[in-house]
Length: 128
Image (cartoon, rainbow, N blue to C red; front, side):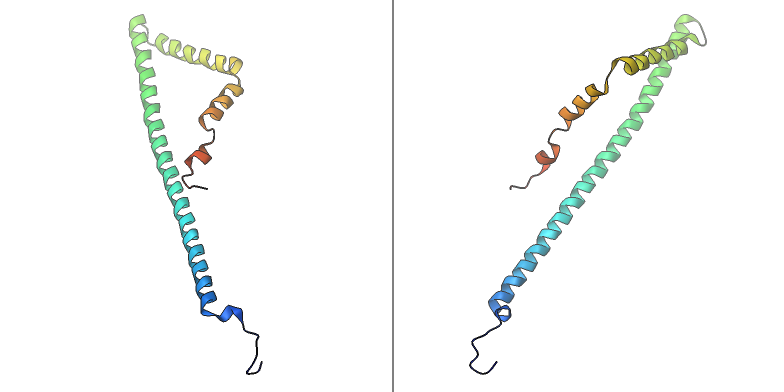
């Protein structure tokens, strides 16, 4: 504690202050980078979801009006006000029964596994 003390506080040197400052700056920059990556992924998910919902909505209306067109066309061909709708409804009933009885969830699981295999690791652009 005196004039000839050999004990110095190592944390008070300018070199250590600079090193600590650089480390804090690096950590702040990495944190900002992670925030930007999360924000970019969230924006990508939002855009994809909005696009998918819009396509599904338009596709649903197309499908609905196509089925109505087919039903009215069958009504006209059969000269009946209701048989076309009955035939279209019967087609979807048969399709529903086939899916309930014949198609197992494992087929959809295999499709999901094949489609989504390693998408997390493939989308990571950083080098380890």
